[in-house]
Image (cartoon, rainbow, N blue to C red; front, top):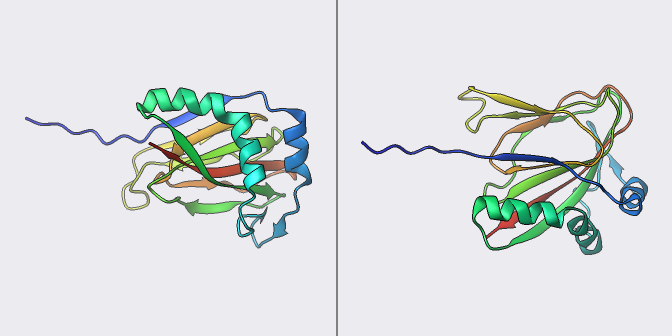
Length: 166
């Protein structure tokens, strides 16, 4: 008998972000959309991507070892701000990438990120919730459906991006 297990890891680690980086994120200009504020549609800011890489590179090196890869490249980064009742519908990212979320600012009332098993909504088996905490970084396969639940404060601020592991 042959057995194949398809697994999609979610890595979670609390990091110490520099105050300078947090200030840079908080001062970025974001556009207001129906469900949140973000700069997703702006040109990718290479300098900001490099600053983000500096904050999470040691963590990404840990993940490279776990995935048995040789290198990584951050493909793009963006910022999202969630005011009261803002959210982000269930979605996936490009399945050739892993993605990340770095919680920059939040409170005990900030909404969780909810991850569903791959195949959701057609197959619903498991969910996994991540509670926001300043400095917490979540790295996950881009094919994992996820959502930012409706927010209950005006503080939830994240940096997200996509990473190619080779």
